[in-house]
Length: 80
Image (cartoon, rainbow, N blue to C red; front, side):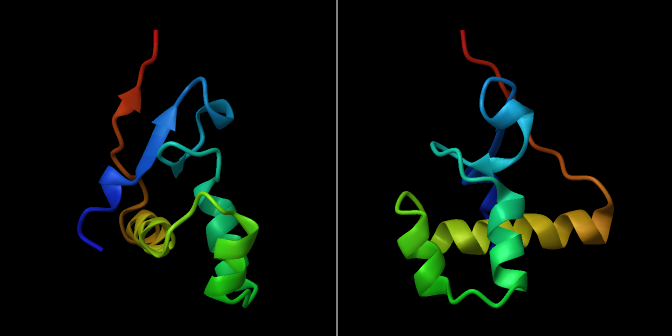
């Protein structure tokens, strides 16, 4: 997924600044943990109603880049 940065965000006021799906409080590592545990995609989508198929793809792409590069550049969202 080329545009995963459009779907993943870091905001100090959301989830203690951990990477999550934009507009939700679903953490990237939660999605990756579920996929790694063999949880079917349909079940993840049922358990986290705010997610879409593209959000799961974005979380996996983010994790893949992190393992490949060691760090990932994501702009810090600052909310007033």
